Image (cartoon, rainbow, N blue to C red; front, side):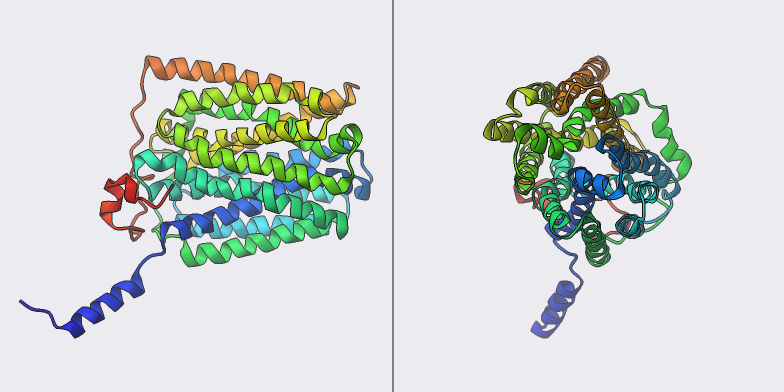
Length: 435
């Protein structure tokens, strides 16, 4: 049977017209949300001296705004993951970004510190759920052995925010006012909504249910993985939250130099997220176990190098590289959570922001007790080492009873979503567009 050239041409045009977006475009759209979230999360720390002065509170008290955002993440991530279990992931991404945009608008308009606390809490609610869903979407579009890389590329939005978004927000905050920085974040959130509406894979609702998602809470391996991040990440936040003030008071640099150090941190975080997950895809838990003691060393030497601009820049770069732990723990949770993939993915960011609340609190406590601005370094090192001790427990458990990789009913494919690449690309790693 022959086919006419006209028919072939019409079929080719139809296929081209209905072709789904390339994987890179989908990952970029998801990463843009991470860029917006990363900008507000880290910029609020770098802007702390400025909104503290404007709202009439001291800087340790102003740190409560950071903790309020983190608390919103901790509470919002599991709650939204459970309540949203029956909704399509694409729909959830759009709604979460809308709430995130509203929270940052209210932050920019806050008349006092109390209202700012409330606005930061609201802005934090969608944070963990967004990253959790975005990670599941990314992981569902690549083979099993490329999950950490795909999740890491979504997380590049967050880390690239520390290179571009946070320094830009800090510059805007110094030049125009801190409120303008949060207005910028709202605009980024609206851009993410547009990109996800255009390019996020369409899926059907009803793939999961709340009771099944809550099953993750019965797994000890889920909780111990979360504990690694909740404690181990606290060290990085202890230093980063008070970095701007440390630079001014200890390093004696001009406020205009602060964005440079924020960018150095961001470069470390971005390169870490680009390269470390490649090792994690080969040896997941050992890679996590290497990151924590290395982070502890970088945090421990922080007080020793704080007086030297160039040594401090190297140390800040090393501390930033430890951010790659987030993507690795996300992949670990996918392995141990069974069918409760959405809740486990969201809980990873609850853990991350438990650290975001714990680190600044303990660092601020050390400062208030008179140990100085650089005391955040040893506090952070202690948290990283404690996280490493928890990792040892998890590592011994995984060695004694190897886990079965979670069913890919949720992580391998989106229901009724068109493939982003021909089937043969999934069986041939060299042809896969991620990495």
